[in-house]
Length: 134
Image (cartoon, rainbow, N blue to C red; front, side, top):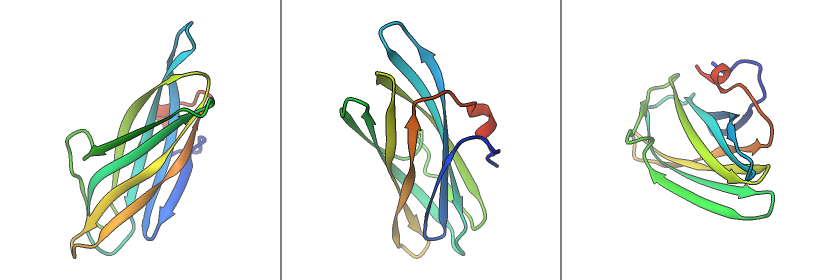
């Protein structure tokens, strides 16, 4: 469960996604390595399978990177009603700040496709990522 640290939450139907971040590394050329955690909660009455994520990162200069991927580190997690899944990722930035946004794709046991919105995550200050975990 996420603790009372700064995090963002977005709800799409009965699916809730929470996110928090941590500055992992900063070097003298103003490049920063960020880590972030996505926690996806299935509050619906049926099982869902997480299929993909489609993430965009836009830095303070307006440069955007589109990062679609199938699965979550090679996994296609199934979430029963009431279950959650956590996913950790890193993002390399050239500059002092950026935002991450996008969505996850899922499918229900009845074959309905879901586009689950991710909360906008502002990468501009240090947070403790270890405090974000379930």
